[in-house]
Length: 111
Image (cartoon, rainbow, N blue to C red; front, side, top):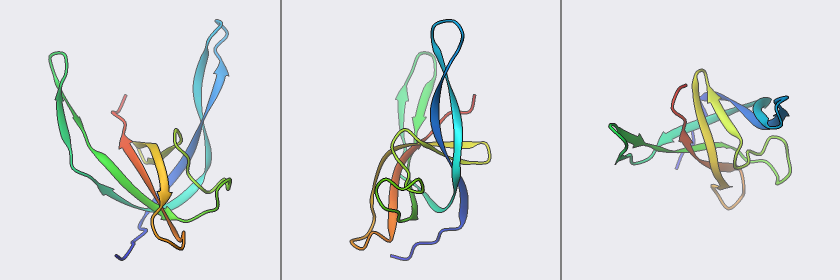
């Protein structure tokens, strides 16, 4: 299957920062940019309190990188495409040569 890395996404890592009140806040640090292919999966809908909530999983393919490399996405990091934010849930090699990685992600609701 041909991979078309046409979207430039920003890779971000969460950083806990003291909030001055005994707790912490999450700030996001930019790690760099990655060319990617973003493919939506099958959606689902769940009944919530007074609303229905939709969930669409995504498969985001990027170039391969060795484990431990700053260019290799990890779960809990996120990828941004403008105002769209994709939380990474898991990462695996897409092919046996490790030329590409698949990030299983979910899109966050805008705040």
